[in-house]
Image 1 (spheres, rainbow, N blue to C red):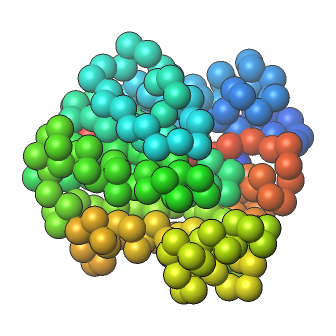
Image 2: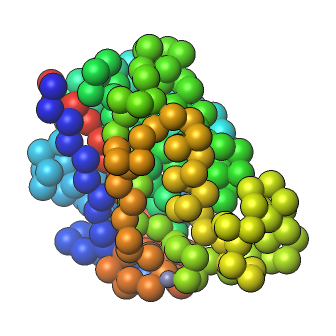
Image 3: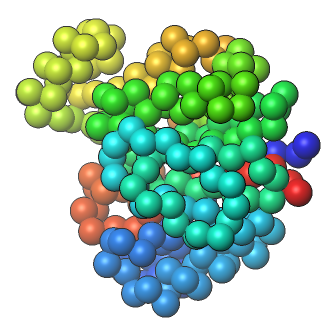
Length: 231
Ligand SMILES: [Zn+2]
């Protein structure tokens, strides 16, 4: 079964500043009609099946998607499906969009890993859910970690830096800067995913103005990561 993945950037949509132009999120204050048009553009440009989004809440809830009847799944930060013909989407502007695929069992997942989700182990919890519900094996999974804020730009308060140091180790904290991609990579490796099966984007969203960045801009749009199996 053919799997498709993609990460959008901020170009090619119809939105006006500060959401210019390809904002895909309704919850950030953009004109709803512009977001709706952008979502149509997304579906047409990449020829995606119906897209399922999440009402992301920076938690660790993983939900199973069985159809595309609802275009938004309530209060969760990871969605999983074994159904071809449903595109799973995660929206971000500095958080990490993580996509997973088990080619053996035919299962895909989309994960929203911000600081809180990372502290709550949302990525390995998604791997666990895929294993428990569908018999997926981590060593067979492929993972794509998309553009996100990187250690060059992610300074946090003393307290958070200390929590990270204590819980995860010196390696993930540089002064007061947190390395979220490294933390997630490590969590996925500990969950049994093989290093050669994990692709990590080198793009920092705060450095690279082709992407929306909450840290850089405050009020801004969201870009997206999508994954689906072709029907
Ligand atoms: Zn940076």
